[in-house]
Length: 133
Image 1 (cartoon, rainbow, N blue to C red):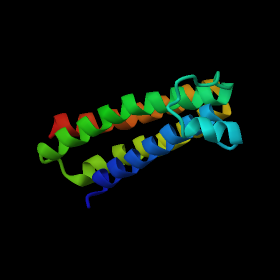
Image 2: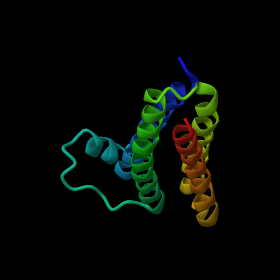
Image 3: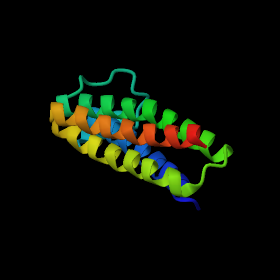
């Protein structure tokens, strides 16, 4: 599998982990009451803790950026851009998103924005490689 497609698969897995973490933290699924809520219809969720709210925002942001990432990689692959020109941007995007999740959960505000910016640079690298053909 070409490396950029491997990073798409890794990013899909990361997105799932982020969504599940947000859900787990919001439900407080490690407690008996939270576990019961997690298996319910979730009609009345508890108020999120600060870390649960950050996990939710990080997961939502990942969904938004994952869509852009997949679209750019797809456009590049359909345009015949060689993997060697796509893989560095894809790797940068993925690893920055891993760091983004950790930094966001830790509540490190300025670092979160910087790491997000690094992931956008990865998207830009893929876009430039695609346009340059």
